[in-house]
Length: 456
Image (cartoon, rainbow, N blue to C red; front, top):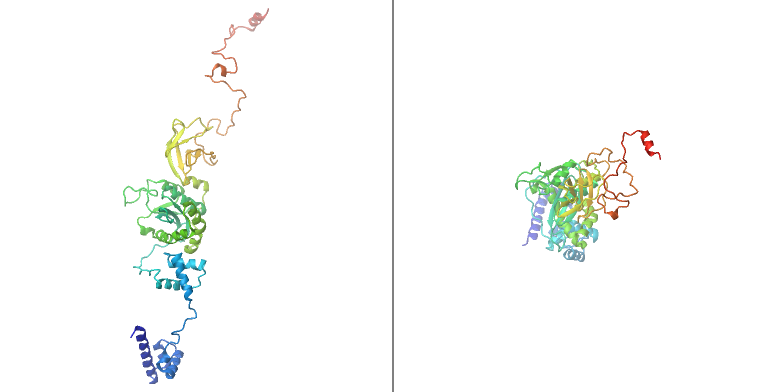
């Protein structure tokens, strides 16, 4: 006897017992129905069918009949073949979303998961462990941003790359997401600049204790907040609090987001046939991020935003690496195996031995500053570009002269004076050396003697 037959015998035996108690008027029809888990009306039906057909009348009449909502076997096979051929390895939720959007699935997620489980294409989820309470989200956008990088094989057939993500804590909205060869200071500034330009300055930034974020004397110890890195210096100038995380669990929200991205983004990039970083970053920014945020972003507890507006020019000049250098005798600045030639300036003849600051921007371009004044801008190869004027709101780099920096330039002479060391053929006029001799007369001679000597 199989289990199904045994269960049916138990149900029939229970029905007969309850029916006999009702016949003996120990139970009312309502009480009998409650004992069998059915309504009074349903018990009356089963009583009549038992009187007419016996135990055969108690058998469920739906047995052996196909459900009117049953999906055709051909469609089930087509769905399973689509998963094997195109979406192999995708989680069921992700596969079902694409099926509804791209393949016109009209059945539910639970049914799809059941069919994949029955076919052995997807493993059943493991039972979850003990519950742990997560840290509550910030109440509104802009109070805390997460930034982190994840090294993974994001592009099929390519070496592992770093994905830099800047995300809001209150809503899990991703503000910036792009691939780089290796995580570092430049990628950090690039993500912050992209987020700050669009939304403004947040109250705080939460990150791990990577060497480009914090300086740590000994591994595992507290960070040194007095010895700032380039990122720490920039955030301090902007007034953004920088919070270090001391364990992976502390930044669990961003870690879970990376789990979602490693599962979904890799498959989406492969499905789109993308193989290079530039195309991938453009596709992530224009196509994937809007869909991702629409799917996973949560509404904030408070609709008000905590972002603070900031001038874009000041933002770009702050979110960059900055190092001090001394100008060489050839009026050049040495930086990262490059020689940055300073252009000619009307303020002073040269900047030899002057202390300047070299700024390296996230896109690789460079600039040399003397105080707040920009002396020149350069491309990534150190070649001088057209110098952009320093904004007039910034102070001058040195004390003004007696005429002032805004004094009009002297009118250029129409004739060029020969140099003191010019050769004879370079001089236009008759050359002479020394001073011209004075007439032989005393300075004290009277006008009468001068007239007398002049008479014939």
